[in-house]
Image (cartoon, rainbow, N blue to C red):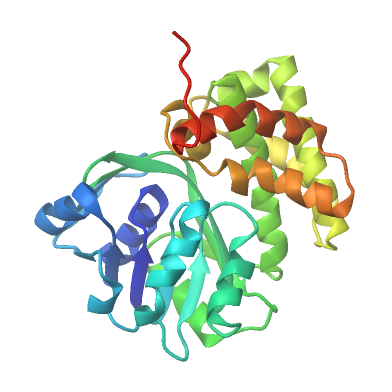
Length: 314
């Protein structure tokens, strides 16, 4: 398949690298020193499942140089989606599928509003990976997983072909019966884990083992589950227990990308994760006190990272 990986960070670099290694026609849309390193030396991926390198690797910062593709895997941060949408049209023709693999629940509506209904599919991924250095991705935890499908649930040839491509690449991938429910299932996990981890500034091991932070995780999960059900999202009855079980099974040193961004003083997905929970709760008239606490506690650091306020602790 002809595939554009729009955003070659941890998730995009890993999954795009696996597809390219398996022989798919993959082009990475990247920028800066990361792009230069990929163009010069290929893409290096160090993984808990085995290291690999894609060399040479097709990479550019100009989608117009790529032209129409069959699938766009959008793997940017949630707050970067609007900018990506502006640059994406040269990649799209009548049967192109556009799949956001990142965090949050807002991207499908954003993409549909800009691109129309036909190109937009639903998607998600699970992985703990990040850019270790320009041209170098490190997969540090979580078994890689990708899910995608048509938003209205119908079976499509483009989804089936992409599933086959991931299977050839040795990636655990599936087309769920209800992709919107799958997106919310991930959102329940990632917003709770990211938010509590960022407030506590600790990896998952201490978060799940200390009674106080475990209660915060459970309460944050319950609030987000309530919002999903208020939207008639068909979640499993045991989603809260499944989410905690997934957290309990993670390697003790795993952290979330939002957490790492906040700790490192970079702009993060706070507005798209705990901020979105607070916003949706307000719209639905449902209380979200734990997520409100998380959001309010992290907002000063977020605004500082974005240059909107200044302060020092010294």
